[in-house]
Image (cartoon, rainbow, N blue to C red; front, side, top):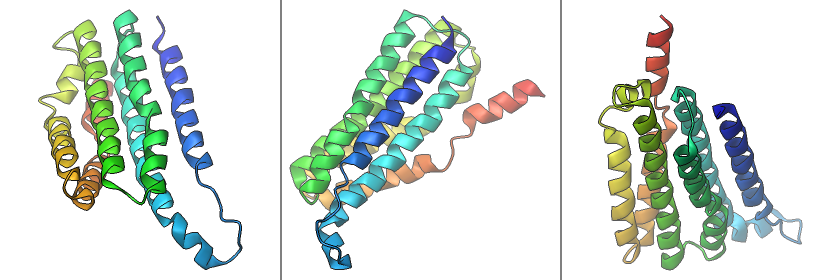
Length: 194
């Protein structure tokens, strides 16, 4: 199967995810700046989630670019990832509308953690098809950054039962870790071209 179809479909789903998130931003009935203050939590939730979706879109692009072929297992693994990413708008809206209440921050963390797990499953499925000495396997290496992220998500989920603000800080730290472009795959692409 052509991986370009898979990438185009995934890009479409991620575009819809962002569209749904922005549609959740409701403007106040009044026209004063002070009327925007109650929307601050909703807007901050949107910014964090927009960054996360952007990170996944960027890394997903690199992941599929490195794949040499696509099979049914990869299609299902990709759908699994898209399922969890499609829950980001709902968890974002719930968290923002309830001013970062503990339960909402916990659910948001679960969605982030499961998205990360799904990404690893997709990555592993691609490597299993292309082989342990494949381009992607070499680029990923021991995936310390990915494993650290998963550990931080789990810690943040547990902490959210006691202090949601620390959990939110951890979610932000993980986002900042990935916002700095992950150049492992790009470096391997450049090495391959030279």
